Image 1: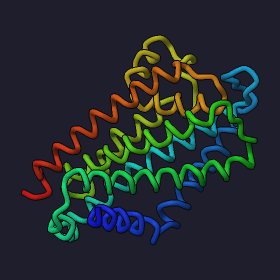
Image 2 (image 1 turned 135 degrees about the vertical axis):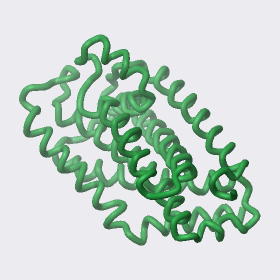
Image 3 (image 1 turned 90 degrees about the horizontal axis):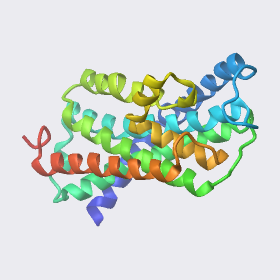
Image 4 (image 1 turned 45 degrees about the vertical axis):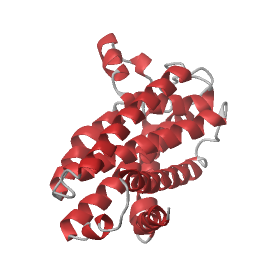
Amino acid sequence: MTGFQTLLHKEILRFWKVAVQTVAAPVLTAMLYLLVFSQALAEHVQVYPGVPYVNFLVPGLVMMSVLQNAFANASSSLIQSKVTGNLVFVLLPPLSPLELFGAYVLAAVVRGLMVGTGVFLVTAWFAPPMFAAPGWILVFAVLGSAILGTMGLIGGIWAEKFDQIAMFQNFLIMPATFLAGVFYSVHSLPAFWQTVSHLNPFFYMVDGFRYGFFGHSDVPPAVSLAIVLATLAVVAGVALRMLHTGWRIRH
């Protein structure tokens, strides 16, 4: 496991060396979202009985930060290695596809959880936290960051230049995250858009994560967990296949 541990250590150091950009900046962005939306809607919206809108908003912002930063970590690492030409130093050691997959995804999970923890600690000053089922919080945070880390790996393998990875993030990851119920409950939407939301796997990550705080959710957490696990299995299978064939990284 020496090769795996070395690559994992390298990937964690890669984002930690620029923690102001990779950790602190996303925390500040999430805090600005909270300030704007809480001021605009706090007095007008109550999604769950007895849960102020600010409290409802915090888990969504935490999960959004976890997902987006997990994706950014894996995708940016691969595309930077491709563009600068140092990807060869990762491919030369006898690392198996599973070891490559594990190192990149675990580093993405670490960054996602670090940013999410930072967002939670900062926003706790504005909304005292509630913990109805803490186990669900941890499960969905880890699985969600693993899925987005895997999607970042897929995006990094597929992309050959920075604007392609930006397109992947701006036209797929960002819309799916914002339409996952971060700022609202899908029950407040018209029937058609409720159906569309239920086709978005990001919705189940956010909804299951929020259940851990309030004990309320739009979908039973067991259903969300099953869909999230199925999504992880699919994207992991795709990523491992791409690594095994060496498509766009070895050829």
